[in-house]
Length: 242
Image (spheres, rainbow, N blue to C red):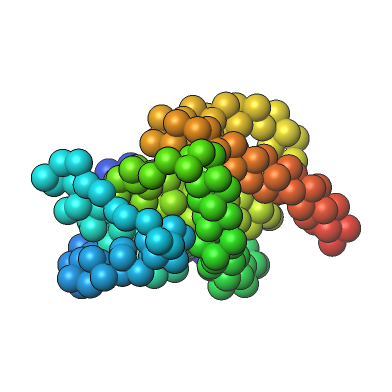
């Protein structure tokens, strides 16, 4: 038996529906970035003084500060708009879900954003300041030359990675509940995921010390292994109620 709203649609119509929803998200992103960009310079200075007090910020290219402002604005808007992005994706998938699956997903969506904010806050207020303060100890008394691009990109990557990594258990539970995957699938793909995360973190980061990569990979491993445990618990609950 199919879900009540699951209609046979050509692939082109599915893609068109997805494109319409992603376009809405894109428009919201553009508007948000345009608003935040106006205040991004002051926000970056406040952020810099918080994570690296008593240090100067340098730029080494004419367009560097503009790109830093744009990236910073995108990151701020992403945190704010994330629930809307998830909502649009849920609305796209909704016709293919049964009523009990919809209730389950809708129950977890607010919890998902809370976990996302917890991860962002942990990265912002705990991890990044600690990592930067420890890194500064290895300067051996030299005056550090900290460029805006390399420093802020590393910080933002850690912060957003913490937020997104906290989504892994939620996504795993939802996927198991609607029958997309199971704990065995998660276990069989763990090393592929870890390798992909390591390669991605290595290529995206501008931190040659390797600290950012280690933090990102360690967090993903912990969250992924925790997801496997939650998937097993969810499977037992499904069998118990089935």
